[in-house]
Amino acid sequence: MSGSAEALVELDGVRKEYGDVTAVDGIDFTIRRGEFFSLVGPSGCGKTTTLRMISGFERPTAGTVQLNGADAADVPPNERDTNLVFQHLSLFPHMTVGENVEYGLKKSGVDADARTEKSKEYLSLVDLDGYYERKPNELSGGQQQRVALARALVNEPNVLLFDEPLSSLDRKLRKQMQVELRQIHEQVDGSFFYVTHDQEVAMTLSDRMAVLNEGRVEQVGPPEEIYREPASPFVADFIGDTNLVNGTVNDGTVRVGGDDGFAVDDGADADGDVTVSIRPEDIDVVETDWDFAGEVVDRYFQGDQTQYVVEPAGEGLGELTVVMQGRQTPVEQGETGHFRVQSDAAVVFDE
Image (spheres, rainbow, N blue to C red):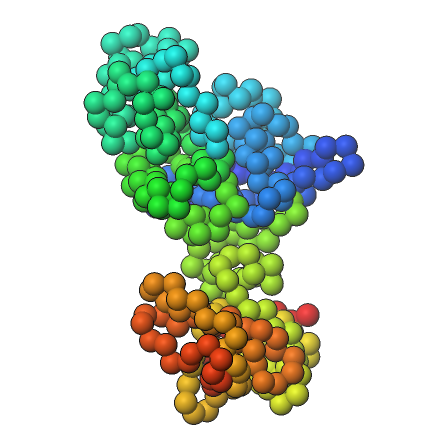
């Protein structure tokens, strides 16, 4: 479900301090009704602290967290229209799957028949029809994850909060759960707020995402925009793979070291010292009109693509990563190739 313009959660100048340590440093972003919004960043950057302030388990030192347009400062966690899915699922081992899902409904005073009907409805939503009487220890890791998701969804919160819920799953199951999470989101009315250090997960799932670095928001936007138009070298380096090259730009040409240089559309108006982000897939292997020559010092076959580590012949560029899609292998390890930077794809950061 695509997000509307209506703000469901709004953080305005939110800051959180623990003694002399500033965990979150004046952040602003909005989660729209019905959207899948991710907060992504390295470990220790303040992601979980931000989630805990939205859920009510932490109180901001400064700034406001608004839910449905109202300041939530004095609203306790159990009275906020939110629900949490943790990294550690914390299913009750002595309860059946159905009883786990119904737990929140029972606490809210919903009668037994209605609880059973609704829990089975949400177990069906997460593809667990027929698992009502099972115990958690009879389920696989992915199935337990689905039970935790059904338990969080069954109360139909406005905002469902996820704290790294897929990090303990193996890669294949994690990718499967990503697809299922996205499909489930499209079938419910609430917004999903997903906290993760895994930028691949965030880009796969999100309508929009915020990149957090040392407690500050570096950029907010759709995944493709953040990948293709990063706002800073940190965002370029953290979201996906990139080559960061330091050089000098003049008249739309970046010079690095000696005579090596390449054209950039983004830097046509820049002049002076710059850092340039070049995605590995935006460097082509060519036979004529190349920007630089370099030896392939390492080559990694990755199925649908081949990754090269290139040592340019000139000074200043340093090792570069180049990715070629498909089965083509125009340069072998130990050979010298000729390479051209796609001028319309490089992003220039004026220092």
